[in-house]
Amino acid sequence: MNIKVVSEETHISADTIRYYERIGLIPPVRRNENGVRKFDEEDLRWLLFSRHMRNAGLSIESLIEYLSLFREGDATIAARVELLKEQRNELQDRIETMQSALERLDFKIENYGSHVLPTEKKLKDF
Image (cartoon, rainbow, N blue to C red):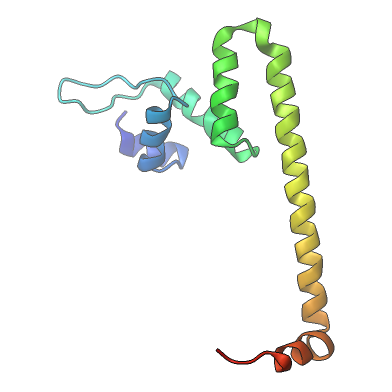
């Protein structure tokens, strides 16, 4: 498969696929005699694994670290689980921050006339 087909099948842009390969989130993809990438099922599995981990909230840096541990073998399972737990905690913190921001915005919408508008009137135009 070429990168266009893989992009369509995985819903990952060609630019992202190239980026993932360049930074080592997926193994180097074989190329044909013209230098065009030739993806196989294993390449697809790596792409989808990386995408799923990103969708689960792992940063690129954390995913690179995770894959480095993965390559070291089963002796790093505990470290991989710990990394995932740390990422979960960071995600939970971001969710709480966003929930708080949502609540503040809801308050401003609900109290626009009595809260936001008087504050706006005190502001000088720039």
